[in-house]
Length: 114
Image (cartoon, rainbow, N blue to C red; front, side):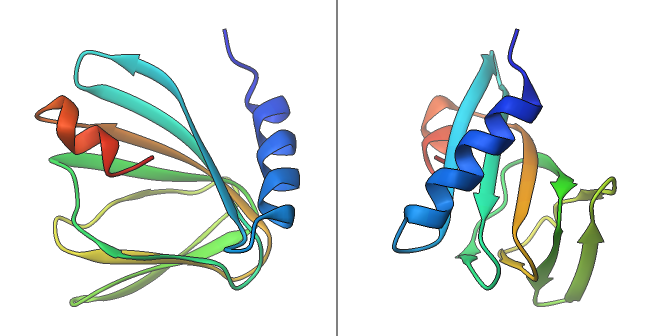
């Protein structure tokens, strides 16, 4: 069993040292289900990328902005947001840790999220 508090602390510390201001760890893989912890320092971003078949973002700490062609959504600690089924990006508005849950169609799609 993984401890999200410990993973959050570890990856926030790694993100603070990373030149891009981010750190990610895929900690659960079960068939098409994937869960990852992503830490982003304030201002760091995940550039625009394609969406998996199904995904949600649960903000554990901080708050982020999810942007896509259809608009943007701000998601704060404790909130869960469905990932839009279109190209999108994520920007940390303050130091943030996210729990990304995805359902993939193939193992090759999961690699894009690491």
